[in-house]
Length: 424
Image 1 (cartoon, rainbow, N blue to C red):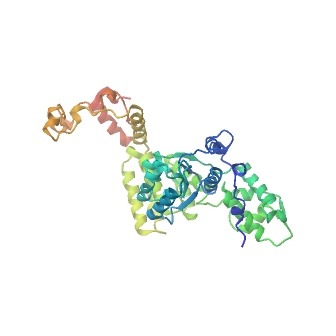
Image 2: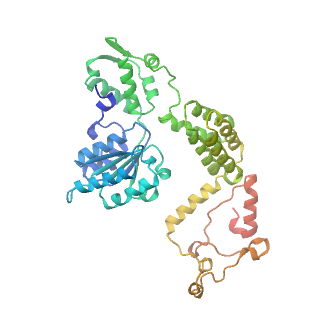
Image 3: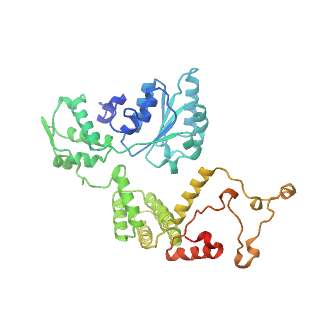
């Protein structure tokens, strides 16, 4: 039985690789490392079908090193350790590290990811991970800090057309057939920037035709696939676009649009947990302190969906969706934590002021730990002004209250306590 078209056309060299020129084009970062035959561990983040696995295989081929692959769906900690042990035993002195490619690395549990740390840090293997999910949320920080992150993009129209031309002129089977590419609109819409999907569709429509000559038109493609070319695709680029429209509609206080985009996801077979998770994020990021109850309702909706499932789960999701869209908005907490993180990265480990330090031993008390600390509950209104920031940062402002009705009281309380420090 012949290999699928997508596998027959899988590039073997960078010169045949389509797309991602920002990474592998002349002078680009990955191209330089590959040409120098020295690469460090990295993670490829991008939608399906944009060449993550292919790129890893090309790198291993050009570096002429052993290539091990694991799927996060089927592999456990034992499989990871077995591969690391094989890589360690098979490596010669001063030889480049074998490559360990892990597809869908975001599906690895914390313990599975932990099992990689030592081998990656010591250079036993060079890790190449592939993920369709944001690594900041799905990959543990110690592993992420040991890897570079490269973002792959959906293939654009020119990339897809180049791939189509290559398939029709170079594939061992298709080049022998009389195929005319009259229209490409439906092919490009269906593929959604996914090279594998494009080739699968091309193979399907050519296999289903017994005519001596095949003329590919938009109508022919749509009839073969029997589906709406604008349908939601939870594995393709439109998945990310619809999620973006959903979140932005909530943020923009448009309950009609938010419900519409949620309905598109439901009809497209989206995982209800995914929708519920996005509602929780939106409640914290976009509604925030303007209506803290939003986060409680979003969490309740998440729990309810987990308990009752489909189709009834659409009702609490819709209730939460409308509530978030019609709630007042504030992103002051979101902006505040990002500013605090930036300040910490910029200023390093500032010492804790002595009066704020814990003093469980007499030695610590003798050193002045906790000396001078004023217990707020001993004062009127349960507040007394004192320094809480490190000495070098005591004049820094991080949280800026936003003047939505729900948050106005918090802002006014801070101005009442701290005076000009909190006046914006």
